[in-house]
Length: 168
Image (tube, rainbow, N blue to C red; front, side):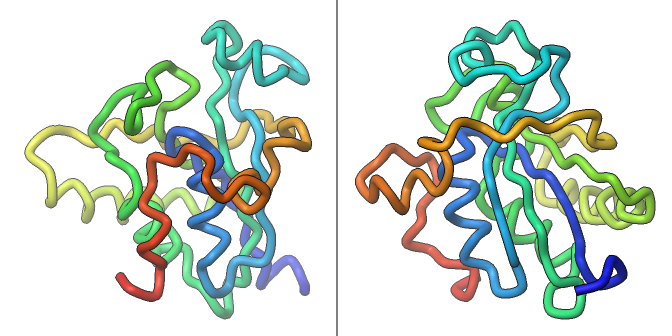
């Protein structure tokens, strides 16, 4: 796949286990992994990120086929499983590492992201606080976090994984 058709995006939506499991079900998503984004500590551990002192957000790396999946559609799915008006919290998870964010490398994606957020804002009476920033850094999380809910089907998740993207 050439660079024209491969899209890259990093999505922070609370605990990364559920976000990865959900996003991975979307047709056109080619690859996901979980990690830590946009913090100020190099190669942080999970324990360091959970301390709230690294500035990182639990984030899902998403590689997708732009010919099969539009960025706006991917973001629509993302917004169905997060509360974009809650600062530093999703479900029972609280802390800056659980903030919502959309991080990009392709500057052309910024306009699409901002347009979709404007559309989403119409659904809420309070402001959306999901940050939209260029990706500054991303460190892949420890192996036991990768595809965690596939390995541990009864593991904790703040997202209803019984609702698949096809049902939206």
